Amino acid sequence: MPQKNILEMKGITIQFPGVKALDGVDFSLREGEIHSLLGENGAGKSTLIKCLTGVNRMDEGQILLDGREIRPSGPSQAMELGISTVFQEVNLCPNLSVAENIFVGRQPMKHGQINWREINSRAEELMSRFHLNIDVTRPLSYYSTAIQQMTSIARAVDVKAKILILDEPTSSLDENEVQLLFNVMRELRANGMGIIFITHFLDQIYAVSDRMTILRNGHLIGTYGINELGKVELVTKMVGKDMDVIFNLKRAEVPGDADYMLKAEHIGDASHVKDISITLKKGELVGFAGLLGSGRTETAEMLFGASRTVKGEIFVDGESITLRQPFDAIKARIAFCPEDRKRDGIIGDLSIRENIMLAVQSRKGFMHPMTKQEQTELADKYIKLLGIATPDCEKKAGELSGGNQQKVILARWMAAEPKILILDEPTRGIDIGAKAEIQRLMLEMCGEGVSVIFISSELDEIIRCSNRIIIMRDREKVAEVDGSSCTQQDILKIIAEGAA
Image 1 (tube, rainbow, N blue to C red):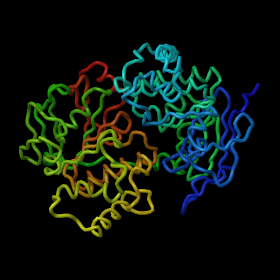
Image 2: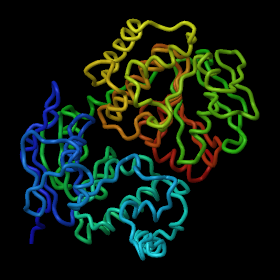
Image 3: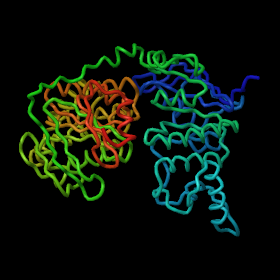
Image 4: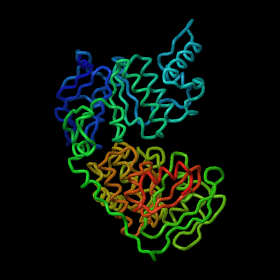
């Protein structure tokens, strides 16, 4: 007996100034189904979800929930109707306890006062459903991103949501945390909940989904059973190009006698990295591979002066330098795109122009300000060069998609003309087309003589781009391999065994 649709969105059309964000899109969700919503950044996924949750008003179309037409006026009313959303960036209160976050705004009362015993008891019961035995009275900030997302899901379960929307929930999780989330999703599906799953990780789509709907440029490409499309066909439909064309990348060529742009000899910090030595030639791309917590990010932060080295020596272009703070690195023409672009990279309330100018103006010194016309010309140059999707350089950076925000951060450092560029997870949480574009930009910069350190959790792109790969485990460098001859299995074996 076929499952019934709990949600039907018919002919959804949304027009923004100068662009039709959605053009007659249909989408349905069945009871007890995990349905992946796929497409590149700008395809219309977020717009469709915002329409369902009442953030965006549709110009045409109809939404049916259990056969009845609905028009939510905002996320609160959508939640009252049984539609709950968990976003990539957890929107909870880190200073409140886990239990308080689950029940905030709807605390059970007793004799006119909040019933803390019931709140904590019910929160423990909810989290135990997800096989999590945690202290729910601790502040949410005490726990990992995975636990914070489980808290959001627990809140949705407690309000008896019929539909759960998971927007890039796995982008900050390690493999074990992803499996924990998937187990919860499967349990909720078995209990009849409909789940809309948005992700850029192809393997995860096939691991957990029942159906998938593909959008491109605001149009519906199609809805398919999970076994109806292979990965190559899926990517081709998402991007409109063959996968071989997308990833037709050529690794940077580095002469054997190329000068060393960076040498770090036996550097370490107070707690995270014990002892590591790194070399980087002019125009070379060196990848850092390793599990979360292996010390990759901490090493990158030492090389940018964001954390202090307590031992060792760093040479840039043959000259010994001391990195007490990031400004010292910027003066030495070292650039750093951080792992958390929203927290440490983009300033969302500033325009694209202002974000791009930050590093350039820092190098020039604030006693020598650039005119607005000079800033606009430089920003427009890099908007065009990197293909940043925006009507102009005055748009707020926080309003851009993840892939375009990453391009703005790249533009900031490209404009500063670095000798060394450190990229920490620059392709995380962005679509396949944007990934390929950023990888292509990295390799083009290598061709122009920039030396690149590239950190990624995705081994296939590390191998695709790197001349050499440094493998880290337990905050130490355990091996160094040739990027052109190693395989994912080689790297995984070294990570598992801890030695080359």
